[in-house]
Amino acid sequence: MTRRGFLVAGSAFSLAGCGGGARSLSALPRMKIGIVSDIHVTKRENATTFEKALQWFRNQGVDGVLITGDLGTKGTIDEIEVVAETWFRVFPNDRAPDGRRVERLFLLGNHDVDGFASKASWPKRQIPSREEAERTCLAFHRQEVWRRLFGEDYSQIVVKEVKGYRFVLNSWHSRVLKEKDELEDFWKGFSPTIDPTKPFFYCQHPHPKDTCSAGYLLGGAFWQGGWDDGTSTRLLSAHSNCIALSGHSHYPIDDERSIWQGAFTSVNCGCARGFAFTFPGRENGYAVTDMKAKTVFQMPPIDIKRIRQGMLMEVFDDRIVFHRREFVNDRVLGPDWVVPLGVVAPRPYEFEPRRRASRPPQFAEGASVDVTERLDGTNRDGEPCEQVVATFPSAKGEDVFDYEVFAEVRIADFTRTVASKRVFSPDAFLGAAEGGCEVTCVFAKSELPRDREIRFAARPFNCWGKGGVAIVSEWRRFAG
Image (cartoon, rainbow, N blue to C red; front, side, top):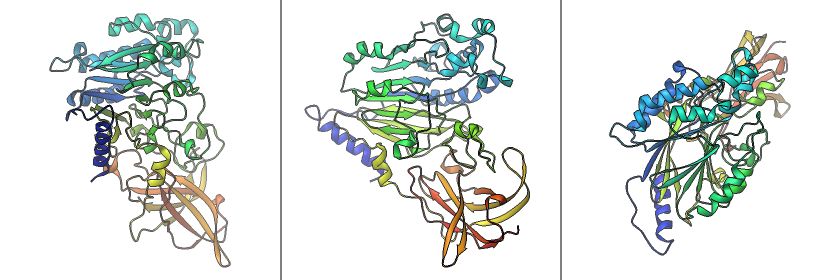
């Protein structure tokens, strides 16, 4: 039996054993929802991925589409107008071609509400004057614009129902305008109405604190800041039937840490705009902390603008299935996530058990590392420097995340590591069918000891920190 088959069978068994006996289970999904996040539309020309995703969702027969925030980037009204225009071009009058209603499950993110005050959101970092912002930006006209474009009232927290399932849509409250977070007060009235036997969906822009994509839960350093204050995690923890859906981090969803189970289930919805962040510290990664660090990287970041991802969520009586997809090459991103449902259902997506059960990726037999010198190299800052380049094939395995590359010198009867780096494959996060390209790691010659025999080794890791067997290069001596 496959892993997926085991999960489905296990969840069906748990449902049959709870609630006083077996019940009839539908072979077809009760509900289908298309999910994207961080579409960051700024004009018609860059709404193409959003439109492509909507068309694919339409062809899958979805009952609704969820966007977990950051519809735009600068927070201007004209960005939201392009989002609405694109939506109604694919779903005229909120209808599918067969006349079915397709529910809009849109919520606002930090860029939509506070983008008017963020230098990072504006070309040449020239934010508008307060007078211009009050005239052109969504933060000051949310009710009016939402009513005009979508024909419904706007409020920070909205509850919508699709096919009998409830969605709580919690939009970003403006930090710049010092707005109150309404979640605590809302939950006092909402929580008593929750049916514990049926899943409900809580949606907000940032990931609930200490849930999905939180690599520090596995023993690493806590480096994210200011995303979520923990209120949502505390409130949702009383409801094991909650499925929390969020974005904001721009972390790729083929990273298996993008789904988490604890007191409830939390899922990272990725980024559909094509601008992904990576965990920090990788020589060719792209992370907020790296951008602020003084470390000089020898490699440019991988092409993060190619990473455009989303999901199709199918809800059955006994399980929820998340189909992960990338919209560049129209490929799946990995095995479906299958979340069993039921009062005593198993929880297969807890972090620690998955880490223990994971297998490290391995290189193919006979693989080795090639080493070349680059005398006319340049680092990420464009500064000229002599470099040493280690190149090797991609590893094999269901969960190759990154590679550790290290330089060793011989000392008497042992070898010592004198420099090490972590790198991503250039085709990381683009789906399994894209895999197999050559991986490169670049060292500055100044990072290595001169006039010593050195060899380079590469070791593949999965996202849980388990490393496979290293492959090595021949011993080389680099002149000073």
